[in-house]
Length: 151
Image 1 (cartoon, rainbow, N blue to C red):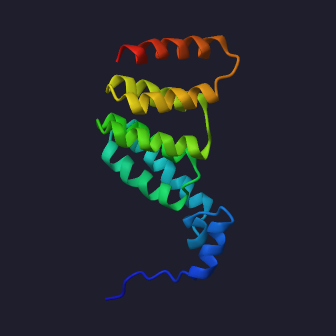
Image 2 (cartoon, rainbow, N blue to C red; image 1 turned 180 degrees about the vertical axis):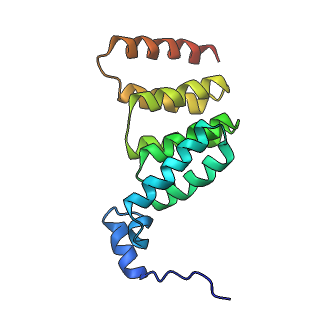
Image 3 (cartoon, one colour; image 1 turned 90 degrees about the horizontal axis):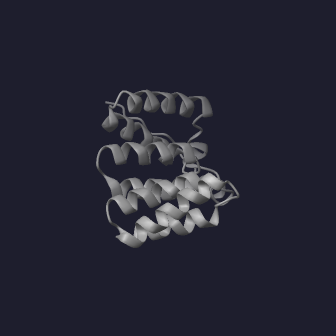
């Protein structure tokens, strides 16, 4: 019986990683293939087949740890499965890949909802760092601060 044995030149892979490349790059996985996997994960998520979406998204974040969309959807699926701390971790990875005010606010909201002061505080600090001049965003941030102080 023959098993799949992709040959990876570890020295070349290490050089790619040092250049900020991904495991998918080291394995030669095309963007089209990753896009197809992501489309399937989105369909699974929207169909509320969260476990299947999570499996596909876990593969994607291994192939490309720099893609905020993969991490964000993974966080959403984990949250919908009731795995709140795991979801917060995935959203942190999304923030690391592409810092956004909205993602930080989600971290804050979930942290407050589950009464986890540390997660909520981190989300609020990240949100503050990315808070722009939008009055609605500023109002939402102020409301979360009040909710945070109540936990």
